[in-house]
Image 1 (cartoon, rainbow, N blue to C red):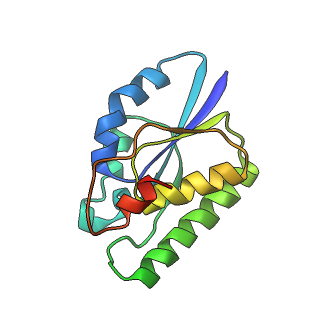
Image 2: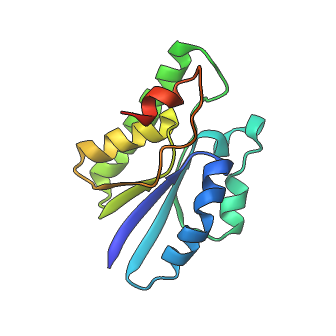
Length: 141
């Protein structure tokens, strides 16, 4: 059995991958766990973790970071919280792969943590082109 962790940070990205996750969950050879962070945990963005809970996915980890800011310092702090949290998580939990979609900074932090633990990363796609924000340079990292 292959053990896969999907990390989701926004309703938009979750909506894109929701059907694939359902198919993976129904595959007997795969154990699918989900970790939730980013906009899903923020009231300003609808606290959309409840959508994932209603879909009955196995949420194994929740990392609440402060994403409701444009301050470089606060964004770096949020990235470090995410990086440290997932770094610790991967020290104690083994996966055959970590799957992510998009180019947001919290997903970038997860990708770094997984890579440092030698966990293969499945990056579905980098998201749509956006100007004047962090996503654009993260997409090419």
